[in-house]
Length: 401
Image: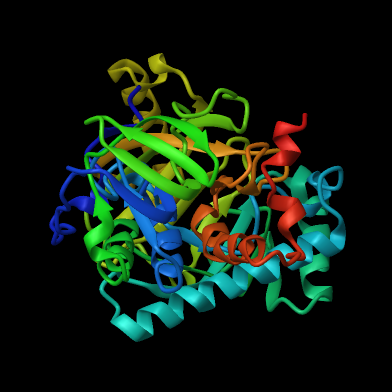
């Protein structure tokens, strides 16, 4: 099944990650990580500092769904607190928001240590609606954030500093950040401690449980003996018997020509509140990356006809935001990829119903954010300690249902 189509912008005109060999012999390890998109790379980087890790990927590292991520890093979730009350308490929402802020600090710390080779930048965030019916809901979300110390401001139609019309919105001074997801993945992998135990083009065919762990057979019939397995395969469900672990969609993205004449307040990352929503940020070369139009994950939704229809819809929506500049806006890149979410907007990170088999699937719009703190959840489990947020991420909340 195809998971990415088109020409992802973030892999263009950059130095590629060095290629790793495929596995050519049997091997033993403490922990096997399967899958190396950006979430697998995050997990591998941090765990390889402390554990004996083997990492395998069925293709090239970072060149599947990671390559088409927009990498808008924000602490907020896909839905407002008011829409998640059946799934999360107010206090859990606040803790998730704070966890998101902490994730951005961790990324910033990593970049300071190794250099900013992934275009990382902290940004404000702006969430807005053009529908007056959303004003009360926007105000309730703003009040929640403000009351718990988040540095945000409620913006209305009359005091709107952005170059497009709104009805209401939340501007958060410390709302998020942005980066190049492929180059961040490259930095994580190339600074990991297990350089001689990373294998590309090595797919996971099947596994058997053994007395002290697992025996995994690869596509070339070599064996990997591992005490633990962590599946970090993103939105690829081929290894799971239950395809209902998450709701999967196809999300579409366009990248424009450089547009120096289009500016907005502090280059904030931007989301609207439509269903499905759109997301926007400015790239370092003055291009705009604009995405959304999510629809159910099906083979036909990758067809040329469907894709072109979605790209055209995105183009019209973008032009409607910047009406004065619409004649300058051209599409230079267009691509689409798989995307997944869950009822509480959070990933599937933790233990499964098979002993020593774990999932590390970071769902939702802020998947990179969740993955950064998801490593802590995995380590708490390994050390037999209760993590205060583990129950919100546990795969068992879905498996048990």
